[in-house]
Length: 319
Image (cartoon, rainbow, N blue to C red):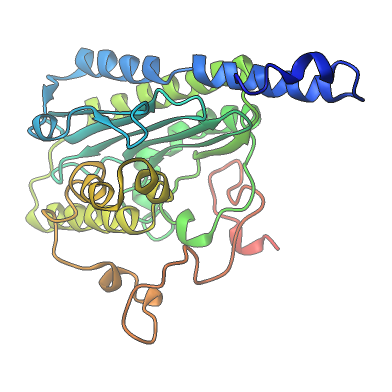
């Protein structure tokens, strides 16, 4: 911002550039002033009203970290509860260029609950948002699972689909981990849009907590194993293909980023199962037996929302 200040007086006489620079300055101020901390505080306070939330053993090993630039902080929180294997949060703060929140809640394998997922990325020019109750099991082949967890939530999804419209192309590979109520959106930073996003986060998290309150423990060993493998598959995908990899590499270096991804953000990938990424997703194997780096190998993406108002997948009919 300091480097722009001397340009302002001269720019007053240029054709419209004052407006452009002014918008950039206001956006920069908004990003530096905006914080996702109230999202995290709400989630923790609300969770404590529903269950006994205790610090996770991970908390001692993963405290707040300083980025290589000496200014940016990676704030890490992790908890557990009777039905929650891991509630964890990564907030990237202190940077004028961006604010990031990666917040997730993973159920214990004895419960087939969806995975609460909030991935928010904010810069001076854009917000990239994913908010969902990620299904543990496939919703097309498991109609019972869809009925159990998503039927009553469809009105909530429709409400925010209007307020936070579909964000454009999303690959079919990523889509399989999302539900019909997913909020996938992009918007220019504004207090109005951020207030809507906070409202959506509150409503979605309360909905997830309601599901958790109602959940009963599974005693069938085969179903527990099924839940465990489903969560492991999800974690394996996220660890390998999560788009936040590059940001973490830049902030803390490749070695620390790899550890943070496998042991904290997607903790369980080494404990819940032994299958590899290529065991679950063999279509990503290249001719040398390595994992293809690009995110999509099918090559299909969805420009429009691929579910109808009844939560039925209509992606195959979208051209």
